Length: 495
Image (cartoon, rainbow, N blue to C red; front, side, top):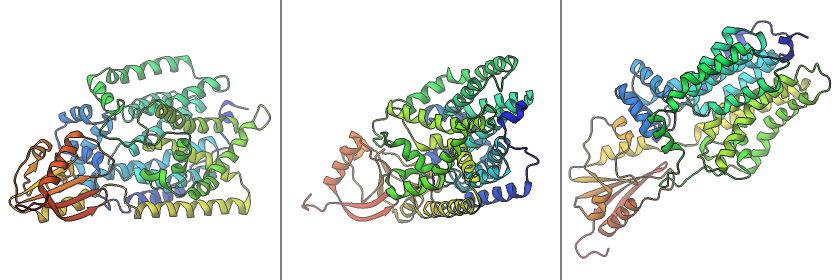
């Protein structure tokens, strides 16, 4: 058996342009559907704010505010200078990256297995609730998914075909991916482990490995030694006490992440979905993935399935497991950080489904489509990002001369104010200290951010002081944002 046949499945042939084009168009349509239905949330507002500023300010912003490397933010800065600075334009870059990610998934599955597995893998990525969700967000996750998958495809091409151009393309993409998302390091570990475990069957020339590793280190280490990176780590790794909410890390964490991969919940509220959805998602996707793993244990030294199955298994299982381990050590854990691992997981599930026979395989595909449609319908219909657009629109319409505004809990206007209402009206903003010490106004608007519990002594003092001097006369609740109108107590009125 030749070296190429050892890691690959049946003969590849040409990629069918028709099916992959149709799946990409489906994925694009799903990512465009309802793109502007929700307003920008805090992290997206940071992205848009920096993209509207000067290029020189991007790095300063990354160092002061971000938990990600700068490459995505440089890219979105250039993108929004070309297409415009609105919320839809900002999210459109992620839409395109998410849709284009379907192509390398298809190439990967076709290279490792066969055409049927490739088509189904691409379909799973196209309709994934998780991947569609983060393809509609002006954050790095969809862009990282694309460059991660390109990195993996080039690695496989270098290992299978022994092509030098693919190896150096892999090194270049690995650098780009690392500068897009720090957790690319978790994705490189299974690649290195595979190269080590299968070095006899698929040896990589030392003339590639040593200079490739050296070039990678040479290009990424300066960033990791920079002051900007040190500032980011103080933001992302050290505990941030005012924001008390964290992803729950316990013995069920791995299953909750898998549940999200299985289209079982809206992305940020996945810990609170009914227990029966775990079973349904597991039956539709996890069970086929486990069935595919039987090929790892098939007897015979010439088992063509062992290497590709081991490869895709390590590619999703190791990053997720390492993230959970980091979460148990106190590092902030969010499922979006390992959303990229869903793609190789879908390849494994697709392989298990294509291994079924006749009617059973057809029923499995129908179940995937139905369950995916249910998950997407829930995602489109369930709000998940705070409604700053609605709350600020009401404030801009209702505010009158002499009114003051208190923003809780941080005491400053949200970034969304300048995005949605750059021309005013002008606000008289009350700081937390001013609210605690005393001030006068005809009416007071209080806009409260309620996405996560926030403990802040200055904010607590401001709330208590305002409650002693003002009474609420009106309240409007928007999703995760509360807007209320207060007036001073009348003379002699009970406080």
